[in-house]
Each structure stands twice: as C-alpha cells, then as structure tokens.
Image 1 (tube, rainbow, N blue to C red):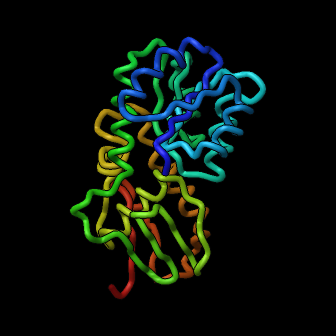
Image 2: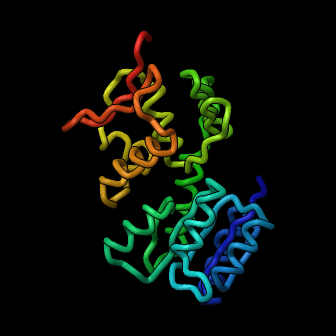
Amino acid sequence: MDKNILIADDNIEIIKILKPYVEKEGFTVVSALNGKEALDKFDVCNPQIVLLDIMMPIIDGMEVCKSIRFKSNTPIIMITAKSEDADKILGLNSGADDYIVKPFSPGEVVARIKAILRRITPPENIKLTTIKYPPLELDIENYSIKLNGSNINLTKKEIEVLWMLSSSPNKIVSRDTLLDSIWGIDYFGDPRTVDTHIKRIRAKLALNGQYNWDIKTIWGMGYKFEVKDV
C-alpha cells in the first residue's frame, strides 16, 4: 500500500497545519475540501490512513466514512468540532477507528496515527497468520476473511475482534480485554462499541448455529469463540 494520507477538511488551514507534521513521518498528503472530492481521491490515491472532518459540503464526513467502510478497511480518524459523546459514538459506529476533537495538537494527531498503524500491523515475531475453522478462514496478515470460499467484508476492527476471539477457542475474553487490546488503553468511548462490533460480525457471517463453532455471549463476563470437538 502506498504511504499516502488523505486529509479531508473544508478548512484549508487545518490541512496546512497538519501537512508538515505528517510529511515528517514519511506520508504524502492528498487533500480534499468536500466529501465528494474525498471519495474520488480515495479511489485514486489508495491511502494508508484517512483524516476525515464531519462537517463538509456536498457529502458529510459520516456518509464518506460509511462509503469507505463499504469497500475498504483503511483506518479512518474523525477530526471534528463536535465534542458530544453521541457524535463520537455515531462516528465510531459509522466505521471510524478514532476520533479527535478540534482544537487539537498536531502532535496528538500524529501520535494517534502511529498508534492505529501499530495496532493493525501484525508483529513480526508472530508466526501464526492464518486460522481455519471450516468453512471459516482468517488471514490476519492480509486482513481477509473467507466463509465457504467467499470473501466477507469486515472492517479492520471487526477482523481484529474475530481474530482475538478465534485465536483462543473456548476461552472467555472480557469486553475490557478486547477494548484495551484492539482500541487501546487510552480509549474513552462507549464500551458498548464491542457489543456493536460483535453484532455486526455475527450478521456478516450469518451465524445461526449451523457450524461447529460460534461466537457466544457469556453474560457478565465477555465473549467466547466456542468450538465443538477441538
């Protein structure tokens, strides 16, 4: 993947402020001043990460986020003036990986970018990169999921949740452990975001007890990737 970063904000000054900081980290900046331009440039530049404002003309940031999520797992950081918890939750549930409120420190934005990229890059010392529970196949190196031989479009976070559960079959993983490991210990959003991701994973895999494995809710404790006859 190219080391491009897409910054979409209708305030050109925000882009100018962020540009030298992210360029110092080796990124090539691709900018967009409205939602339509952001989507058009996303398809062309294949960015490694997206910084996305919510309040943009033509197409707002929430819709841009949803459109990107429909076709890609590229990390998205929302940068916006909206600070209410409801807006943060809406942004995260729309597929964003992180949320930063204006005014912000450019250094904080860079730190968030690095943190996300660290989380989505499998450590070199981990040899296990694929897990198979027929007909399910998980490839964490390429962030791909197949079920019955067909690709399933899960977001990066959904893949990481599924990988973390399935790599420890029949063991209960608490919601807090999932939050700390996948979203980071500095995540202060709604812990129910884990429940939302689990719900989406179940829906996308169309789970109804037809396999010898399933994602079980262990009330008051967390979740378990239950496998029969391990």
